[in-house]
Image (cartoon, rainbow, N blue to C red; front, side):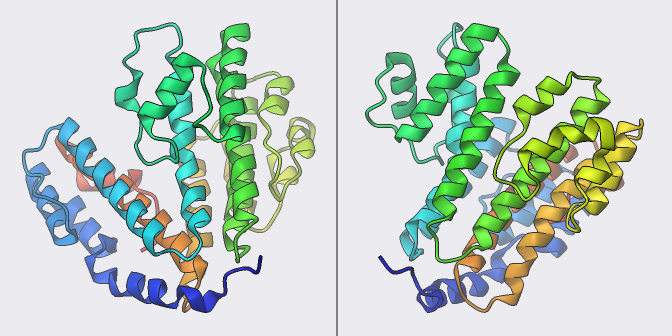
Length: 330
């Protein structure tokens, strides 16, 4: 089957560009940060199509943000020439749900309230498969990953090891799906995400004086930096292993964190490297790259808006909020 041509994205790309004025963007986000209180910050979001959230409870905020996320994913799924592009984006919610269910094993069955409805598999369907061990309505690779994570947790009583297995399966599925698309842009983003995940694991393992075997278990395959070389950080240092141009600044900050510096600058740099990669879509007039960046930026907007509103509710000032915010693709 021939791949979709970029010209088939002309309508959707134009539609996305036309919606720029309805986006949160840097200017409105700064208005939220500078707002006197929660209610004033919440009202800024009404300019972006959100309901009036003045006085809203935390539960109401989560409900609105979840609906917003579901709406834009559903809209893109209807309009996108390659449905698999949106399917790939939904994977992270499937694996979030898997982690919630696996960690709830043996406890009260109230985990369903924490499940996202934005994955490929409806929360009810996934919960029924998990508790009933009937996986016929769940994609096989995902089902296998959940079963293995459950077994790992039962055998080791270590939820971190179960999470590691799910993370590896998540990125493997992402690479498999994005590899079928008409662009390598999304695959490039996934590979860079794997590098960042491995870099973070390396820094945390060394900083926490963890055994090299833990990092070997955590290392994810498929990135630009080979997984089998990750453990070299123990002898050669973080900067030597993660010397790729895109990662150099993060690796330098990571080495400083290993040596005792705070993690905040390192974490922010990691997030910003991924954001910078997505800004490459701004140079594309039309094509799947525009959709990939749009999905990621809408998610970033929700994260930023949520952070500001909860910060305002908690009494954080403008400077503290700016410190917590990552650079975002706008």
